[in-house]
Image 1 (tube, rainbow, N blue to C red):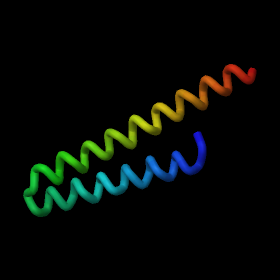
Image 2 (image 1 turned 135 degrees about the vertical axis):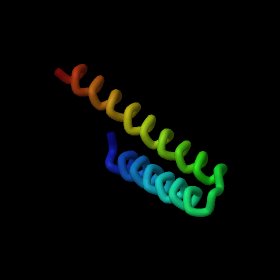
Image 3 (image 1 turned 180 degrees about the vertical axis):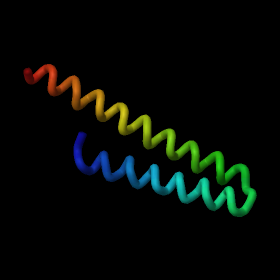
Length: 61
């Protein structure tokens, strides 16, 4: 996984956590849901990139 992809996914995760907390504080269910969605998206991106890294490592062996 490139460092840029890791940074992007981490930033998306942080953004989602902040958005979820803001939704919690304001009682805005849509903000909460959007924040959780961004966190899931970031997690999926990390998983996809980790799988690609593992496949590359095994193919290089």
